[in-house]
Image (cartoon, rainbow, N blue to C red):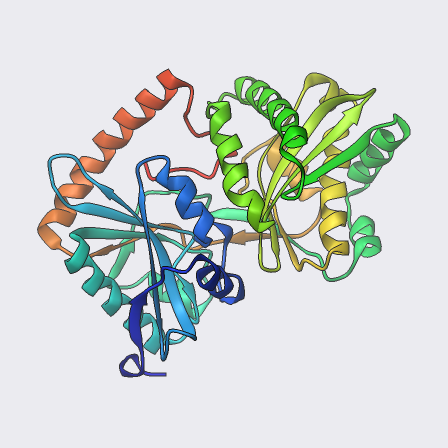
Length: 362
């Protein structure tokens, strides 16, 4: 396909956008319409740009989050885990870049920062390492671990490391049980559950040395995603107490664990092992194709994730596309100082992102 065959348009229909996202190559949940609404809470303005031969058939696109940089009057546009679509095709890539340049003139965008789930060895990933793209500071985790769920629950359990199987069995023998919530859970039930999630997550953040956001943030995330059915919340219970938790997003055939934590009792009882294994088994039985552990930390967390099997994935990482050279340079100078100020403010408010978070730019 040549770039001349394609036209660009802005998508304003949430259902149409999400249908495109979930069926697109390189798709990821931060490209869903609802994630743009979540980030609007933090001062970002979402736009959805598609390209294709007709509005009914996008072949590629990007949800852009725009933030006006103080004093400069120009915008940084961030594309979380995107662009997405048939971007192994050079004609599609060229058409998308051209559409981004047109959008940049209309919206006074100096720089587009992209962070797609494109592996280094793919044609798309290789193209992002060349002009007109350039390397940018890390935003989302550049590595992750994904599990192919196709073999089924029995084969996946056999693929656990021996110690992990032992700990899963130990938790089951100790009476650890699993509790699950989804978007259909009534408000009077999910409210207390989210309060327990926030309690466990705040405890984990303090122990691990990152700053969790205020409780209303995760409650708002749930309220935005729950009507679509693309969010799950799970707990491990020991003696009737919630001692470990995982917060999942789903997008098409993928399930992603975004936030999680445990109490001291949960760690001692190995509840976190059973909880993660139960989630993997649940999504496999439901027909999901991929379970994404969303990022790999170092040390014990990395070894913990490795024990559940799967494959370590490395993405190309964040890349910048300059749309207005003088303002692009000014943004590069301004963003580090702006980011430091934002992080300091968020820490004072108790709203900063941590190592298990889906992070903001900067």
